[in-house]
Image 1 (cartoon, one colour):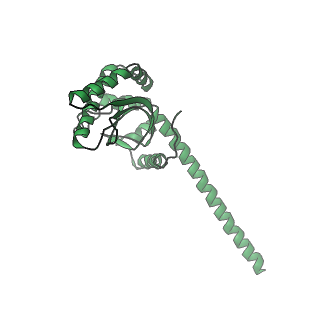
Image 2: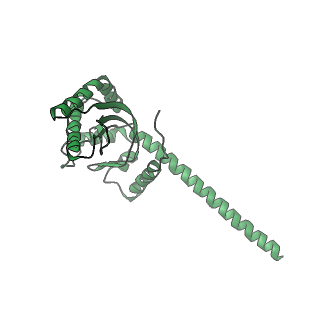
Image 3: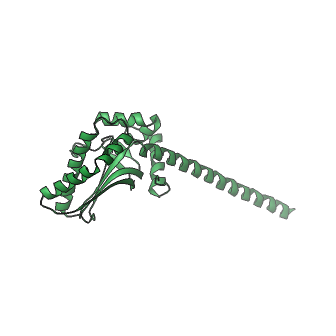
Length: 221
């Protein structure tokens, strides 16, 4: 009788363990699927800029910001009437050589002779804040600009919609840019990246950060 009772207890323990594992597995799959879908929607709505300085010296870092400023200025002129990310990328591709020449001219005007490597691709970005907008880590389409040996610190921002602000001390994202992003995302997705999100939304953003930060998302082909 005692053996039967022990066997029954062991069976219950095993069942609890199995059910707990299945529940954990189901929750993980749901969270992963949620993070993947949301991250894809957000990345499909923005076109980013990634500028890498030649080195971490003060001179090279200052040069990086000057290159950034002139590239953003040109982007604003070219894409002022763009309605979505695909339009912006198409225009940038058509004017890619212009962006390279602007970067090179900026470098030369400041007394340097660094070369430039510039291309459009799908690159991994960390979680970044732009004023009251935060974008989760993940893979995003971007214009990548490498100055010289490209061994210095990065500058990450968003070219479309223009969430970058040249006057970084202000930390103010243009309202029209936020409106464009809001129009391209669902209500929940915009709430995820907005500073005004509640505790529940903030928790979901942490889920995105966790899965994206641990390399569980994949780059678009």
